[in-house]
Image (tube, rainbow, N blue to C red; front, side, top):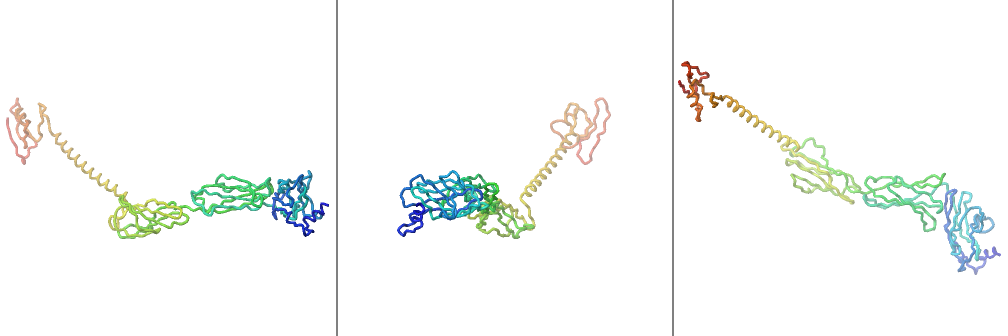
Length: 429
């Protein structure tokens, strides 16, 4: 009787009965891993407004009819060909189910049968395919990755069921990731891993992989992307083109060198002359000019692209003071300092010689018996009274040549070192 009713309702043998009142909704195909489980999203509609219990769900393999079909799972039985579970509420027309231990031997079409106040096998079916390997994960990342801007990358893989999901890992592990299990629009589950990190210029060109693993015996699979990181100019410097010697009127070519992505598309040049900074009207990566003046000049450049800008380190050039002469600034100060030191040393030597001459002059003075100074240029043989007068406050400019009479003797002593060229005072006392 049930079979006849089923044929009438869903076989559409009676033109007055529409099969559109009885239908099931499920994916057309599903895939699982050999030996794992499979989740079958399922719902149905009936002409009856209410499905009363008790309600039983049956998954039939091969055909919707009893002939050429096998019921692999019946929720009312404790023993089944496949272990399974009805996850949905049949009274609410939800027939979502899970079947465990699914192997290649069970690859086929599956039909859902409802046994309750309404009993029928729906004509819709799902084809279940069994694979030996996991499906390939898929990566999503922003269209543009910029240095210093937080990036979120996701890796997702379909899961055969919620109870036995694969595991996702990142290589290299740029930062901590979090993994979630979510349901897609068609009702099938998927595992999603989100990686958030702060990229730098060092990450440009880096290969990042998402690796999916499952239970033992299943080969891991991976998906790899290469990062393209945009960043502003870096490591800028001013370079001097090979110039053997700077000479007045000779050409000089300077280059502004650095790295950036995208390439630098705007350059600015600056010149600092004795503390005076000025911007030049050069806008290219390199420029050439002729030496027209001497002195120290500091050059630096600025590079800019769509991401940012940066300044270079400075390049100091010592322009020649005359044709054919190239002296760097640091050579001038030792030269000037050396010349000054030599001059000071010369003055010191001359002053010391002068002092030595004065010292020798002073050492030629002698003390008389009374402790008074006598000029050695005065050659005397004098009495004590004459000696006193000669050592008086007014010293003679010329030498005094004389014979000295000793108080106790009438003999005289000859004066030594007499000079005919000098005026002399000869005295006998």
